[in-house]
Length: 284
Image (cartoon, rainbow, N blue to C red; front, side, top):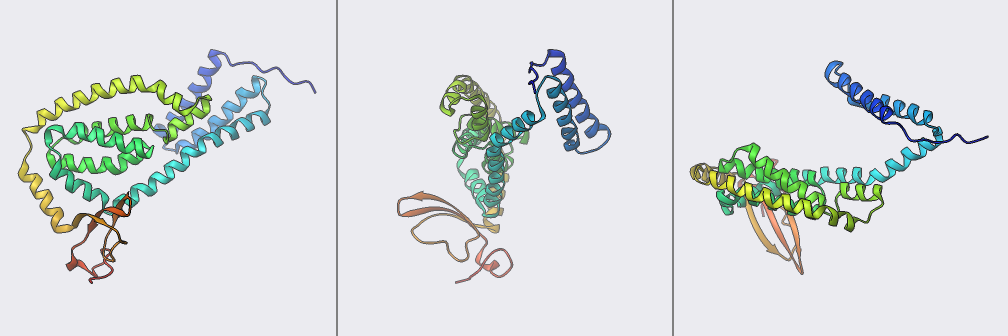
């Protein structure tokens, strides 16, 4: 059997397929109140029809789809790990600890710039912007609320730092996916993005510093002290350097490896709450 010649789609065919999918997606979500997954499913048949018309066989299209799913599976696994990371940080009391010490240490004038730097370092180390926003980002939002900084501005600093770190991290799912799909080494991919990303990062940092100076004189320190006092009454928060395992009544901790020791950020309920269902196991 003679194989059909394969040709590239015309510009009209590309826009027709894309427009059909966007129309379906808009109709299903905005008009018919149906899940967008149905539009994606129907869009699959549109692409199959276009591919067959261009000379591809169904088997070739199936193999291409399988290859694309295999390339993107790493990103899916990272997103699953992000959910576990965020839940662990929140349930373990790490976020309240960061908020507590952040309110004590970060000056309002540099809060926005510090937020961007902290979130960028978190995303750079973990390789996920969603994980950085769901852990350090949540903590910085709490600190910003305590300092009286508007939440939209704090969220802008969080996202700026998270996406910068994510795009330059060799562990990032988007970096791995983009480099693998384009056949480029990860390091070369990061080097290509570094000049533009670094220039925009510096400009953004200068702007957030200027905005932070504007809010520095409007901070109600009495409100900040009230938040700190409320957290002290609710939790027992401490940073401990220990060479042993976790205490039985510890509510949660984030260990940082130091040779022979653990640096523990611990958030526990007061001893008087033992047995009240807050995770306390022993009152010894």
